[in-house]
Length: 164
Length: 342
Image 1: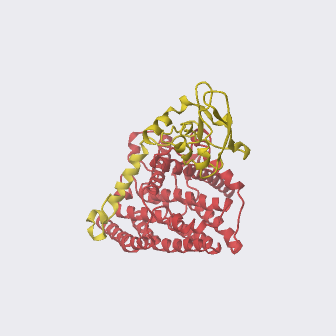
Image 2 (image 1 turned 120 degrees about the vertical axis):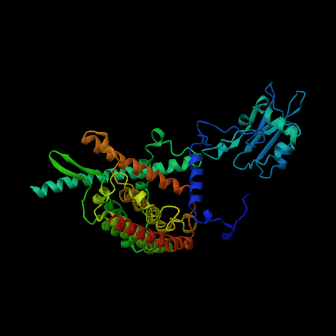
Image 3 (image 1 turned 30 degrees about the vertical axis):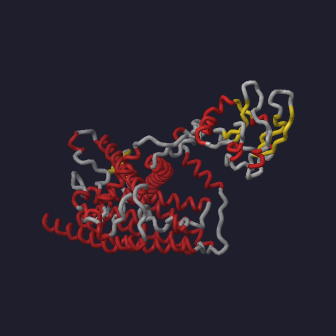
């Protein structure tokens, strides 16, 4: 950071101000020819880093089963009370599965507690940030919208293993 | 017959100038946004039409469709009068500024200026001073503290800078020995441009012109961070657009005045030595005028996005303690020049 100067510390050329104006003008002129940082959003989309917390999704194994065992920890820890889980039972090796898993995206605050508390790496924050609804019913995401193949979530899972 | 002819010619000139001004103002707003974007490594408006070229029309349409709100405490008649006055002044001033030498059309000699007044410089000075009333009226009549502060600042600023402006112009007038803009341009033939003859006067005039048109670094009457919108805080819809148009029209006038007084008007040095036909010379000179104007307008916008706003007391200090003595020095310099040349 530049040192703060008082009026008496300034040199003669700084006091008459004109050379400083020219300096400032040349900086802005130089910037005019630099490439812009703008991403033209609908056409170009921001690809977030793996530390990004987008909307939470449920991990789905290759065989189409959910990883979630419906322990309900995410629902307990959620500070905004956005998650609702109802457990069901199957004959498969992994006996429990969520019969109903709903996240109310109007309530979700993207804190990532659910992901942190999950013992199965089943609920993961994705990179999706485009969340717009036309009515409140649409904002409640059920299993159909939440289930995402694990292969798409590898980035985040690796990140969690490293830093959690 | 004679009077009718003059009237028709004058009307055509007025039409051309007004249309040109309106188009330039529209695209000036566009370029202001574009240049600011470039200076800040952004893209700027590029959605409406190719490269955003239709943006000004979208802006105007939006402003036309907005509700016109007048505050309950406002003095309605003056509140309405203010933007009208601002616009009249802005467009009226351009009448005396020549954009080219006299040309011959259908055997008639037509000078490329709406009104060839022999006191043109006085006329522009008088009209720009009336422009202050528009701002002060709007500030006073809005019934808002922000507007009032903006109006007061504007009048104080104009008074302090009009003095150095007047003295700088006096230097030009002494050299040209005329108040007619065309004579002043003719007096700067060759490389006798007033920028080179009296550089100090040029600097004081440019600074005063920036202050007169309320552009940064002297845009204290608006000063968004402290005064919300300054004198036009309480304006909306087309009344606001009136002030907006007037501001940009004033930019055009200021650059035209700088060109006429200091940058040799339409003149291109030593163009007559190239041996071009007369119409080509005239066309080149008119083009030269517009190139100079474009460069100056770019400069005004460029300065806006580079230099921060002056504080009120700094502004007054600069006006009275620096610019005013400097313009006096310039006047003495010009007087000495005239004495030596005689």
